[in-house]
Image (cartoon, rainbow, N blue to C red; front, top):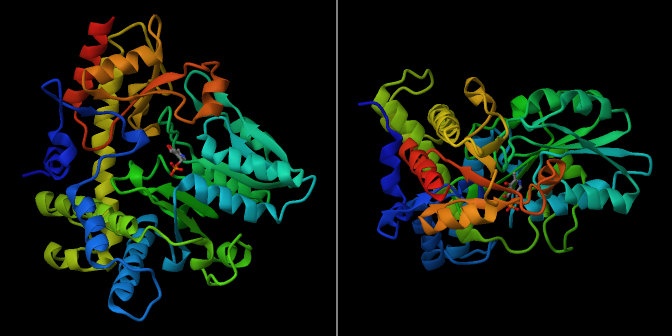
Length: 430
Ligand SMILES: Cc1ncc(COP(=O)(O)O)c(C=O)c1O
């Protein structure tokens, strides 16, 4: 029997929810995914049985430290980080980025430049702009191509110069689902001597990450977007995490990653991140077990489950399957939404180019505002987002402020039938 994504839905209590007698349809994933039961159980377990601050010589503290160390290891495998000590946990991506930007900016001088983009979430723009203002540094902004909402790469290359100290790039847009060619963009940044900071928040729920292959300097993501609780994650090359000077209190450790993890962490939530990663690795394992995929480093799936060495392989297989499933969903969105001529999708619309996007769609309607559409869908049990979802540089560039767009986004647990129901509901409204 081939592995089917329908089987994962039973792990999510949220799918038992009804609105007006009909199952809720979660197309709000880009703002935060639902979580499997195992994630909530892992959080509860820490609160009930291992609740202590870290670094003590007593059972609960030692257990708590062991849990965080295990989750850090698993996170390193998710990102293909060379060292566990390069994984920093924090409150969320925005908070981490503000902290890092302040520390990095200490190295900048007047005359220096940084590069941000019009396609990014503002959390990958404002922290850098504010730090640049503090240091008298010039901010360059990469334009987008309209209406496909891809980055203008010629413009990007024009902006790079030996004065560029940092490029802040999004791997995937949280508004239009556009995948950016970040590996090439990182290489170009390095060619002029700039550092590359990658916002992977909207990439990580959909696609595999490989910070070594990309050769970025920093990568950030947020676990509540990939089936876990609210925890932000930063990966940075050791050379930067160790040489930069974080804003920290004096008694806190000087060694990485602790020097970057200001204050007491949310250990229970970090345990939940571990369970979310187990969930993803288990998808990889299920793919092997159900499809008998020959995968060179996996001899026996039974022993594989126990071996954390093979976890990276499980993540890769899981994301291979997720990507395939999500391309089907992208095609369904494009086909279904094209049945309503009044709907205009902002982003890649060519069904032959679904490999260049994830199934996150933003659209406007010729006669109904985004707020009206989102309210109508919400009343009908279809959860989606409206406005700019903090991708403010994009809605400004598109001239769509203040109303913004409607965003419907699928994750691997969504179905093509849900996409059809979305469009049927939009038909009713119009
Ligand atoms: C692409 C992108 N970057 C950054 C963020 C900010 O993440 P956080 O909520 O963890 O601060 C979001 C949140 O929606 C996002 O979608």
